[in-house]
Image 1: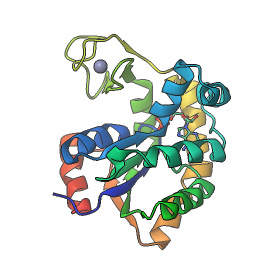
Image 2 (image 1 turned 180 degrees about the vertical axis):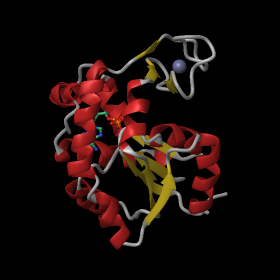
Image 3 (image 1 turned 45 degrees about the vertical axis):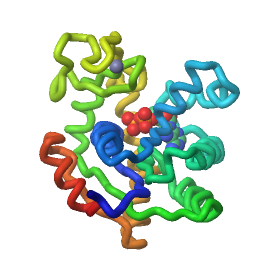
Length: 217
Ligand code: ADP
Ligand code: ZN
């Protein structure tokens, strides 16, 4: 069992935070809040928010802080967050971190910890450009490291897998640059608040998962 349950997962695109968040949330009954997944769903459904976010997401840029912060604040009110939650992909700027703290204070909650997934740029590029995703259940695969049992098809639901347009080599490089400029400053930010635990993200997930459980215990 884990004692830290209100969590932020921090790390570059491709660090594997989404994959570990899916496993952890399922096992520990936490709400998995992936801002990337929510934004992609809003875009697919053609909502107001989706229309505003579309150009940023497809180009690999960041959606404006206020839009994402409001979206997360709303999500945190849902019932499944009572038992704890993992914010995966939020905050991505120091300003978003401040907005998150305010939103949590408003509903009488606070973060228990921040897990930082550390990996070299070389691994990140390799992982991102080999990533495949399920259209239906959002499961994540990787043709190099964690291929599906049947080529191009989701193990869990049988749906066809696809490569996200923002996982092409060029856009992946742009996203890493944006990460280094805008999101990486959150590492010293949360370290200064004594909230940060670091996981080496380069190892396979059967090694990093027990490490994750240990830092959350
Ligand atoms: P990854 O972590 O692999 O980069 P995500 O699925 O988390 O991908 O996010 C995909 C895209 O959604 C981002 O490139 C960005 O455009 C948008 N996005 C997701 N979360 C945020 C956020 N917190 N702030 C701004 N934009 C975001
Ligand atoms: Zn699926």
